[in-house]
Figure 1 (tube, rainbow, N blue to C red):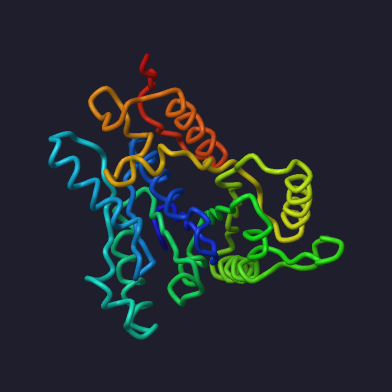
Figure 2: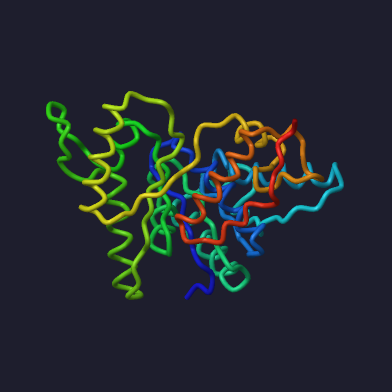
Amino acid sequence: MSQAGVIVIGNEKGGAGKSTIAVHLATALLHAGATVALMDLDLRQSSTEHFFDHRKAWTEAKKVTLPAPLLVKLGEGNHLAKAPEAEQVARFQEAFQEMSPRADYILIDTPGGDTAISRLAHTLADQIITPMNDSFVDFDMLGLVDPVTLELTRPSLYSETVWNARKERAVKTGKQIDWIVLRNRLASTDPRNRRRLDERVQALAKRVGFRMGPGLRDRVIYRELFPFGLTVADLSPSVRPVAVSLSHVAARQELRAMMQSLGLSHGAGETLVAAE
């Protein structure tokens, strides 16, 4: 049994913002004082793992101290990505069991696709967080709509994956998985299209049992800080690789709102004051 809270960032569609959510969630938890073990299951791209490698390099070069997760590297290079599924699963289980007694949270970022270790990770989750861009393109991974009426017809591939994980978890432990869909990268879109999407998302939420939460908008600051391995939670008078503006203050508030919707201590860092 895991002693840590297990949070899985999942969506089988690429480009939904999983890694962006993962690094912001991790740094917010770290600033809240939690011990976080982080596992990146995208064995080829490893964007989340690279982010924290950048963080280590930047803080060492600038001689500043920032909290860092227990970064669990499942393999060197692309070796494990090319290994048989059984080897991947065994390595994941070994690393998970090793981290469980050492962390307050185990945060698992999953790839944009269906893999054996991703399915296994979902069955271990206390929370599954699914970022979804504000479009029917992303909704298609969660639910299918009639092409004529746009009415919801049935859950789609990823919803079935989560449904199966929740059943397996309930049978094994008697516990329920809390599934949250974050409306991520919201943009100014046609109000009629957004209303249509809202209605379908709400209908699917009732049908398959997830709840909604606010995600992170498509802001320059999130991309601007990535090369340094930093997030808006890290910005302070001593950590300021870019000039702070009102948009950065808004991004900090956005992160707080996301953490609150997840029921986690926000840990969004010091109060920011925008430059004149």
